[in-house]
Image (cartoon, rainbow, N blue to C red; front, top):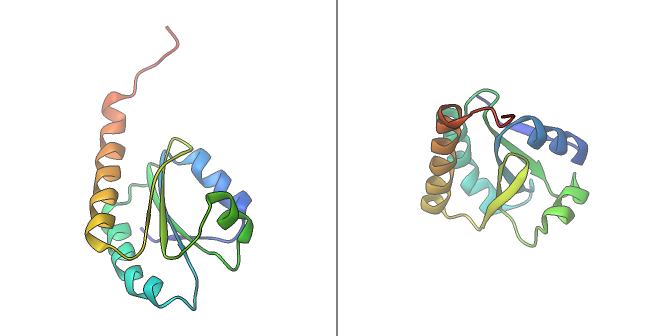
Length: 122
């Protein structure tokens, strides 16, 4: 599955509300470290994403500054991880091993999500 390019804060808000697990990359076209880590993020997006359960997205901090402000982006690349609409963790700087572990852990949760889903309306 490909990575969703976020162009507006509203698009991002909708994505995290409808998708249980989201991995988000904050980057900029001029950022050298962003270019270095992007192939890793792309590889994990291809191998770990699950349609309608676990989505990978990215946004350019220069193009969507209100989202960068809301997330508190201070340096890029930065990665943010969401579960059921809430930000659960983040990672800054290009650290492929840490990124891989976090993305794989989120994938495991997304895959297990159906196994644990029960109705809470009892």
